[in-house]
Image (cartoon, protein in one colour):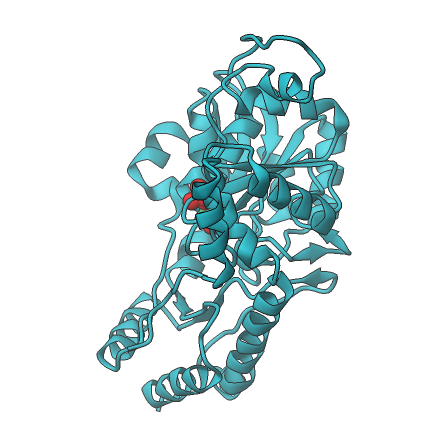
Length: 375
Ligand SMILES: *Cc1c(COP(=O)(O)O)cnc(C)c1O
């Protein structure tokens, strides 16, 4: 059987975790958390990176930093994971869902401006499959309307847009290290902070609203409760698990890209025959092979394909019921404009197995099975 996902694991993880336990250093902000933060700052060239307990929590942290208030509106794609919306609903804001582009499945930047009202406070682009949104246009809209940009870069580590790491272009970026992502710590994420002015507040909110980080740096002689906050720092054992992968980040990324390119090359004949569609990588975007998906003709064909693969031991999945059609999306949000592509395109998409350790022969076998289906 070929699983859809296998969580990434590197042998050094065991040594690093044992070291945490042996030294009795398992709480947050220990050696490995600092190493991960430093790695992220160097790799993404952002002002500050802070490891968090999840990408959902990094987005919540960003929503507090952005001072999102009840009644505010936040613009985001309708095709995304629930966390993108939840983080803002928790602050009493209304998610305003916008249609996606059929080529990248990202928010259609041309449909953002018409969704802006006097209540709009932020735009949340989601870089689907680690392929960048049209950030120049989005940043231009945000600047002209004085909006904060929070990038949901859950899938975007190692990807760039015109040379800039995803998550570093807007005011804030949220990364995920969930076990389904390219690098994992089981549950975890990171907040990327672009501007120096937001760093101290971020540290405070992440540490239950206290100025504990300053205390540990010796900048103050006692710490106290200074702001709204929560507990967004992960155990150092989780960070140790992640760090073992970050040390070989390029190797993991290259292997994923090799498999991605292999899928593409193998399936190109079906694309050329007009039977399926393959992912599109716009110019200026470097992606991280987070996902390989294909698009069938419609939902019936997709269901049949997923079932066909499953019978042959290959696990493929679809995801994201568009948020504006989900019960909570109806309750908390609204869709702006017309759902031209969101529902239609989401119903056609099937994700194929993609993980560190997937073998080239397995990719070939999966592609052969898909070709058999389309015969
Ligand atoms: C995985 C994912 C999240 C949530 O990440 P967690 O770390 O599990 O909280 C949010 N947004 C998108 C687009 C994701 O793919």
